[in-house]
Length: 392
Figure: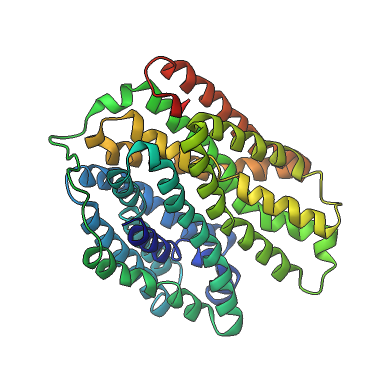
């Protein structure tokens, strides 16, 4: 079941970043301004955020498999139509918005599905595999779409990374099974989850994690193009893009390592290690542009691993501190709040970049990691007597 739901996420998440991977070609083809190109990207995020909480409430009451199947079909179909029919800003924005709505039906319902199948003692490792699939699929989306676009055309690249999502419905409905004895909720939205201090602290950790992670993913390619060791290569754009794609894909092993270690060392301990390591790199990376290319590559790849180490343990923690029948709602609110910070972080980074360059901008990401550590402290204080040792 873990393989089925992870494959479903992998095939679906290829859609999330295929637009970003071919953005320069779309801008040139459609004559988009920077603002309009950004709006098309933001439309996917907006669709995801609009749908995520209602979807979470649905999977607390119904089987996640059906929601995943429908969501993947919508995101794959909308992205395929984007490749085949979209010819400008309005159509592109609308179809990316619809694709984002569909993606909301895949990611969080899959986490609920994993939580139903795995007991808490093994859930961190399983969640690490599942969430790691998101990072691996994101990195491959950049690499695959970019490579296909360079060889053929951006429309072929977007189409090729969209069709896999259309296979998810038959996969998850044909091979998947519901966990026996899964808890289902009754009634409407339960405000009790918003009064749970341990849950709110975990949501804070996740939000600040996303602040750092998405700021890094948005700005790292631009930074690498300014590094002399990369700028002097024959194809700096290709080198920088490939390095970023590999670093993002290494988030998959990062999630797996973080989830597995959290089953053994404790959720908060591993989250703290991951946030500390990524925060230190974020704080210093803007000063390291003069490194030899080999050493710089090593730093960036380590960055790609440690910046995701805390993700799976955090989502696993959420499933452990709320009522089992409300896990879907809790995860969806976590995702809504967490992804909202991804709208702000790149803007703050850009403001700091204008003010003082990358040496000033990257520490804004480190501030997110260290704010996450403050939330770890709040979680420990809240749960010291009431939560099993593993989460500490």
